[in-house]
Image (cartoon, rainbow, N blue to C red; front, side, top):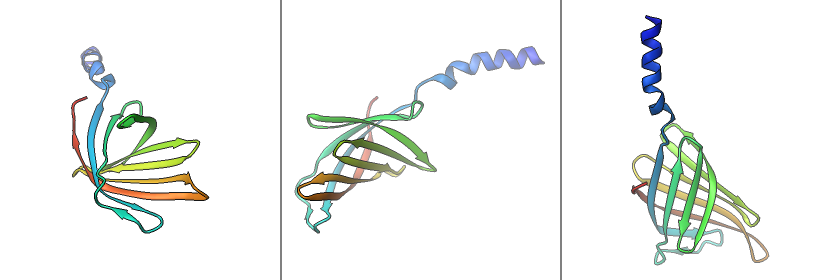
Length: 124
């Protein structure tokens, strides 16, 4: 019996170590800033490549890209990005809803912004 269980464990081991990468293609039709300004005309596209095994991710927007780390919370996935200018947090829901919140240095203070949109699953 132990030998059979061990053999089954070995057979399933490659599945347990297989990388789980999710690509999300996102568009944000609503952008609002801490000064109360909302811009419905600029609809930036972002691509997020999320590796759930390593808990790391990459986001790309045109010529800009950044790496960050992930945390899962129930049905939500959170992507965190931090650099010398500030921090951004992206939250993805299973239904495609997405919210991007940032706090970056700008001008004489901190600029806070929220982008609300949707994401679809892309190809890894």
